[in-house]
Length: 250
Ligand code: NDP
Ligand code: 8X3
View (cartoon, rainbow, N blue to C red):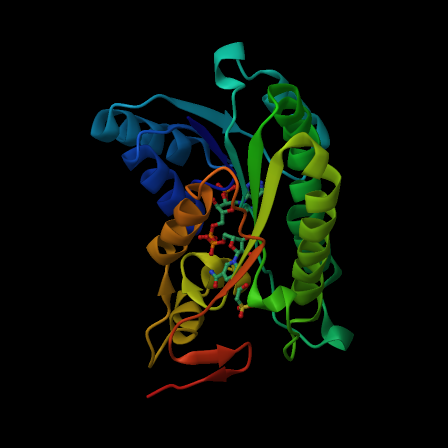
């Protein structure tokens, strides 16, 4: 069994790669940080005695995505699961003060990057006659909160793409699922607040957020349902979070 996980150098993607490896999958891991990919690959191989293929590319760069996926050796092409996880939020400003470069990074990564990877992996799955694409959406793709404007828009786009992909890939025996988490403590807020660690930590202060491992378990559960079962869409929140804007903090 083979799982292809984008954004496996940190957070949810890394925890997901580890859990699939633990369950005997061979793993294709991707990300921009080459050193992390190399270290993580060595760790997975020695800990779980599985094979790992590292693909170092930026999901925003179509040529890099195409070259990386075209380079996949034949024996790695029987991809059972693609986890479209690479993504980010950058900035948290009202629309009138938005930073255009932040907007472009989110749109290019969360929408276009997910599309580039899907466009290149789905024909391989069609050729194989099976596959499962699991897209990381967000509660931000179901609701909108103050200053979340463009990030929320990108995750609403993922929500729409998830539904659209499921229709288009239905005749090809390819399952499509969206996982939509609330707050998960990863590097997400460090990226959103551009390296401001204190502000990032503050985002999870006074309550227990979800952990990357909680989402990994959900993804693995979705991927391990019987062949005739597909989970279309999951919203998963910390117990103390009711929706995008209502959280009980101490
Ligand atoms: P992290 O910042 O911890 O991890 C993000 C991963 O995405 C990293 O491995 C990073 O790798 C990769 N990535 C980001 N940009 C690119 C790019 N341009 N090209 C290739 N890889 C990229 O965040 P999370 O684990 O929290 O986020 C994973 C997904 O989950 C995202 O789609 C996020 O929107 C979603 N999500 C997160 C929530 C949260 O509260 N944390 C809640 C709901 C959804 P590298 O930097 O090495 O390229
Ligand atoms: C990440 C969760 O609530 O910060 O997608 O948008 S939230």
